[in-house]
Image (cartoon, rainbow, N blue to C red; front, side):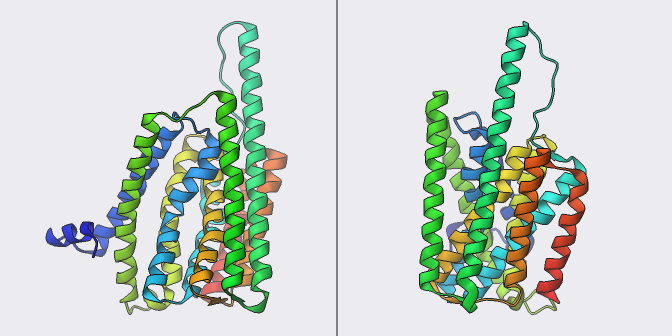
Length: 339
């Protein structure tokens, strides 16, 4: 039993609602300090593709560790990852798009000052927009690539230890690329990570500790339930939806602030934590068989990523009306997995 759970138990507050509140509070704390990282040397797309995925995907990594420690079936991890990723790329991006639209174009503001200064500011904004769009397109291409590799490795209806090693190696290569990209950006902009950056990272880690405590208790609670749907047999689905909550907070928060670059990149980047890292680690620890809806989930992931790439390339974002086809794809996924 971890110390935080002992404190909650001593206070007589042990309940599913307490740990759901802890889960959301830890997620809010991480979101609060992640916002501050924008002022400490991380530009928007780097924050979305490198930092936020670890925070929003941390719950999935914790779930992998808990399933492995309990000797649970690896198939639950695969279900958890598919539910999380498909929900992110369809439902969680469709709803903000329907509300506000997800446009990467910078907002046009009345500029003040000399004509030369206005022209330079407009040029800088245009350059940043192009960089954000290219970075997002690369991230979406990685989703298609990782999903395709996972589909190919699972052609024999299972993921064994050698498959897991391939997936983890792919993830490590991708992360090295992302880290060097951020470092190059900071060298060009003469950015350095000051003391406040590391303080915010420490606060984010405290939030991660609260996240671990809440997920550990909630997984144990769900494993002991015997309801019609809320039961141990649906642990992968239920935990996958639980892990979606921080992603939904990120998407709605940044979409409402018209920062579609971060809203988009955080959802897409989270998929790189689940697929290939979580699946790879789980397969290394415990080879898994594939559920019947595996091909459907992978097909929807690839299709949604290609649709987003098409919209970003041609319309610089996700038009509002495009939210409806994404909702339809999510309904298809639910039908394939639950019926």
